[in-house]
Amino acid sequence: MFSQATKYAIKSVIYIWTQSLEDRKVSAKEIGQKIGAPEAFTAKILQNLTKAKIVGSIKGPNGGFFADESHANFNLKDVVKIVDGDQLFSGCSLGLHKCSEKNPCPLHFEVVKVRKEIDIMLTSKSLKHLAVEVIKGQTHLGNII
Amino acid sequence: MFSQATKYAIKSVIYIWTQSLEDRKVSAKEIGQKIGAPEAFTAKILQNLTKAKIVGSIKGPNGGFFADESHANFNLKDVVKIVDGDQLFSGCSLGLHKCSEKNPCPLHFEVVKVRKEIDIMLTSKSLKHLAVEVIKGQTHLGNII
DNA sequence: AACATATTGGATAATTTTATCCGAAATATA
DNA sequence: TATATTTCGGATAAAATTATCCAATATGTT
Image (cartoon, rainbow over all chains, first blue to last red; front, top):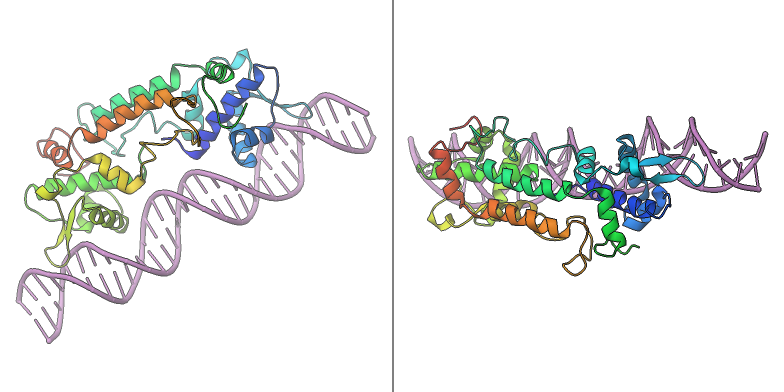
């Protein structure tokens, strides 16, 4: 469902939020280690998330990645779109150029229903909210925190 | 949602069924051309579908791929599983080793719902049924038939 | 000012996925 | 039997994704 890069992105962002809620900035190195992802690859993904302003970053000692109220309205769909584009959300799932309500592919109407659930999954909670659930111990991100 | 190979596989199988319902066997070459897929790559995918007995094949002149009543109970989920394995249907969507009802990742319960819809999409109609819809003109596979 | 820490960005490498090529095996037909 | 057609299977190539490395930039600390 998700590319490897998107999986890392999702885990990274939620992890950043868990730490930001306790006022800690985190380095790409720490993030990679905590979420079990290659550090340099994670850094590349974080660059894109930062460029998209989904998280913030500060260079230098005591710098790192963080999220604050200015990032509080982003959700997982935003993250997925930045990393993988929107293939998951639009376009014919079989790759047909012409596929529509009027001229549907064999999967068209079922895909609409699947995408509705995917949308709910990725938009009903903010990234911050997901981090709060992790902090509360209701969900988890790996071995971590 | 689907790999390129799976998209080709789905289109191939439905196309084969549309032709088999009119008693025509089809070559890998014809299939590739009709569904807009590279012929040699399509042939490779068809090998796997044939090995899995989702379709039949006969070598030589007037040979080709076909489907008959012995193949009538297969659905798209069978096809997806053969080509892409079952990542779409099982395992943690974030790649966590330990993820369960008791110890869920942040997406766990939402993923269950998404997968329920995916299952419905891929199992509620047989491949033959999907081909009938194409023949009736209710759905389509591209420029084709 | 010097140094250490961290992100940024570009180049490169490894792996996986997608795609191509070709010869061997099977089989229908002339 | 010879020939043409078609799948089968292995080898190879191209492209995309995943991953690594290193130098440049920014910035806090001593």
